[in-house]
Length: 72
Image (cartoon, rainbow, N blue to C red; front, side, top):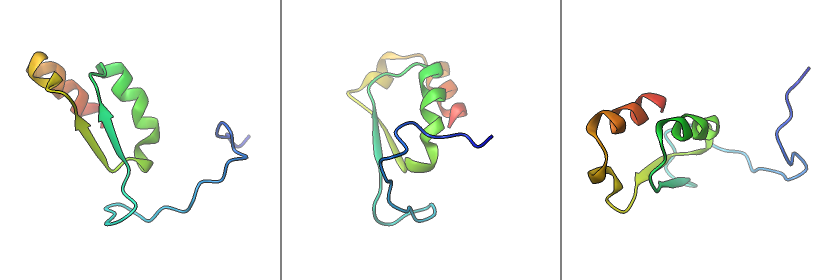
């Protein structure tokens, strides 16, 4: 059985392949944990840039930042 996306009645425009030069989608990470980052990657094909916001990376352990990177 084919999986259906939620709200499939809302049309999503066609996307060009990565790396894109226009129509970029940015996500601002305001302190997601590794599990939330992994969940976010379900939408990875639509996300071009992830910014770590408001200096939150400075407050985290390096190993936690690297764990986020491994989910991407």
